[in-house]
Image 1 (cartoon, rainbow, N blue to C red):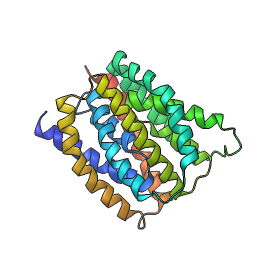
Image 2: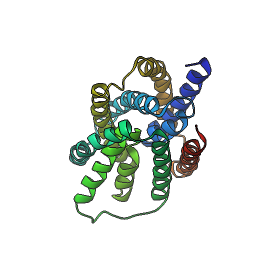
Image 3: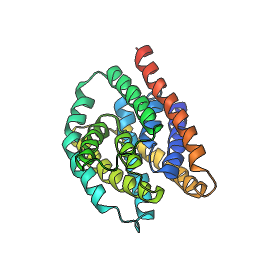
Length: 244
């Protein structure tokens, strides 16, 4: 990899870490579609997963006083069902097709996140179904956030509980995903080097994002995040169409 590629990935990681620290989600959604312009999709997915694991574990510790055990357990257990299938997709499906799928899913996630849904009366089976989808996306694209974000938003969780649940679940799922990647031979020296360089940058983004929480209006900033997610979704689709 060239120096320009490392700088580009570092800038992407820094911005994605700020967003995740502010809202509890968005790291994979933002980083992977942008990183695939500079590195191959498998490298982007594995690197983003490794960096996100460290980021989420830091924020899990920060929100440790918030009780979120039951819903976290439901999401983790159901995600385990989908994770092997997601890994199969990453290994066997054409990279351009996966890029297009990632872009489409990001756009769907943007649409769902922009709507006001009240699903508090739906049975717990809805939680488990979102967990399965999150598991598939975790190992295939490192973007397991949209199903869980949609679920917690629809269940009207408070911002504190919202971030607490996501960081708990993301940490556990990312660790399990990394174990699967290791067995599949996806943690290459290039991935290891890129992750080691990106993690300190991520730490700076998390530090800044946590301190910006009290200064940023979540409603206004959320609109900016949706615009950015929309742009990354389109970029992933364009990359799939025009890449060789």
